[in-house]
Length: 112
Length: 116
Image 1 (cartoon, each protein chain N blue to C red):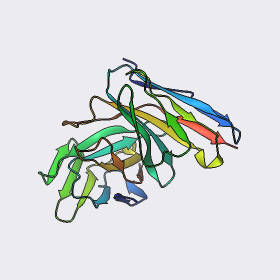
Image 2 (image 1 turned 60 degrees about the vertical axis):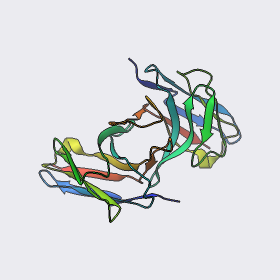
Image 3 (image 1 turned 90 degrees about the vertical axis):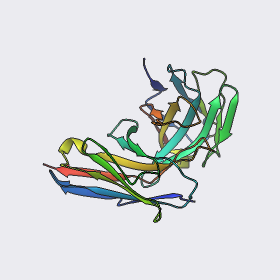
């Protein structure tokens, strides 16, 4: 049962564009939503995270937008660079459990 | 700190063979977990541990065993390898299974396993 649905599966954007990756969740008990970035041959690493009591969080060029009523959240990358080319995973978890549920991943390519 | 280390980096097994994937962390983390990563499937949790001597099943535990005798080590055992277990395996650890902000799981570099 996929509890976190991520789209698109792959995305190609020109340098300077704003790629947007979307995720939707089902379980309203989730209360922490991280995004992980993974480069080829490496393990995923935490990029940015948000709690559902805020609608937006920015860290540098990365922004999470959160819509609690729609049970959706998205990652925006401002002024994207070729170095941002990676696979991005959204995730969800809740404090009463000790697991993170990951989305299926988005392979992002930023063309020079 | 070395962080989370995994060995081996690559492994080829024949169907029916058994092996152990090693994972170690030097950050004194309580929580450790194993994931497998398959194309289009994201990261799926195999087993996890919230402390030495305590383990539990994740989403896809069949065909795998774990134990946690020390805080540092969390090996994953394949009992009888099958082609369906061809995947990239990641070990991860974190400070606590009770999340705090910011909560981060630290991932190892992965083991690429092929079962023929």
